[in-house]
Length: 321
Image 1: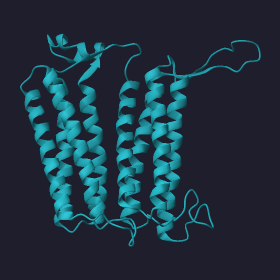
Image 2: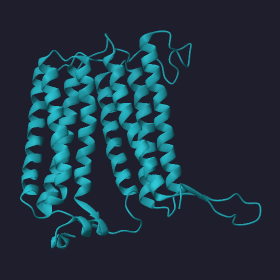
Image 3: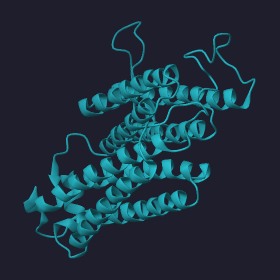
Image 4: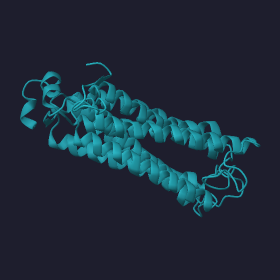
């Protein structure tokens, strides 16, 4: 079947039924995930250019205009807000696509609606962030909710690429699965502590925005410990994967994780010792988004559909289903 099919009317005078193929729906879900990733980076650009209050009202830019690009700060914030519309369209397309997909599946419908709910919640939280003059707690919540949406989007993409009605089987042993879960916990702690460093740092989004009353050096030290501990977990898991056996199934995903995480750590330490330049902070936010994504992919790789599982796993691993 092609991208869509208009079937015959069920009765005289009714509209034809539009159906999209499973591969086309996966493309739609990938588009939603990409848009969710871009909005995180564009939001960071707003903060790093001190444009967080370029529009001091919501949903209007200000008390006089809905759209205002009369200043650089207003234009930057306005572009970010307008791109939110692209994100809304992308997640709504994911919902509509799940409803007209050939072989409608409940898991895809639920996941796509979860994206819509998260985007709406984040838009409202963005409004609160403006109303409280970029208080760091609101900014932290805005980013953390976005990271949750990345996780949900990654799950949707993976599920959309799986055959309908397939049963899932574990690809790793219990110990490796637990380590993968611990890796997700460590990554989450690293991201949360990273938002604390940001909340205490110089890039508030506006010159007059309040900062967290914590010592930035101490916050950065705690964040660094969380990062190192998480990398250590990943290395331990990689050693299990390298030794062969069931854990080998997640070896490619672990390789991607280590590459992204080590690069992210290098950017983090470089920005700290070079006075926290805005360009590196932006790269660090993009890196955090990438780390969140590859972490979720590792967890997803700990189980696969049985058909994929038999094709990719070594002989004897099926006993871990």
